[in-house]
Image 1 (spheres, rainbow, N blue to C red):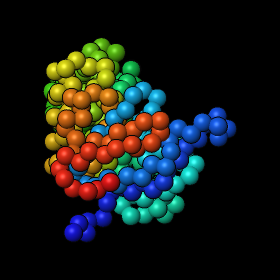
Image 2: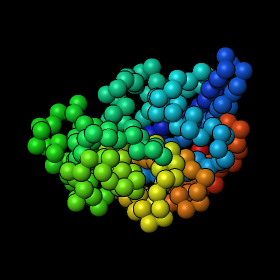
Image 3: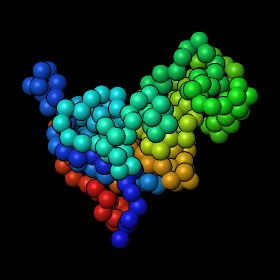
Length: 233
């Protein structure tokens, strides 16, 4: 019997748009555990991105409950500091600041931490080196390739050692080689740090690294494939 507290519990989650006439997420209940990767699969418009935004506190829940490490939303001090420390966000578009160097983009994500300038610099350089970007650290975002920008975005997402990585089509705009590098790095991070990752995708290459595959259709989780044989959803 597993007595470890789940990292995240989602219970009967609903999200409405257009003055309540469109239900984007319908009665979703899932549990995410440490050390596991979850792939959220479905066609465009099925509610994958909306669900990630609700879990990541980027959008408000209309009905249902979210618990982070056992604490309901209203008791888990959901604020910008919590989001920085608990979540690592990865999107299909990198969202880096164009006029900053790659290193400066990572340092910006660390600015609210209790770190010295030299500590932030070292952390940024280590993360970029891990992503194969040592030679690009001092290049501005607008001067590097799309694949390099996305790898830098991954480095930024991991800057604060997040407990939960939320990735929305993170390899949608990169070539297959870069995609594999990104997936390998994220998988290694989750397993080594005993964090968790929920990754929205329609790509079977991406879902192949998952421990659990959640299939979504019309705002609902319609089936769950647990490749490890552990019932956790």
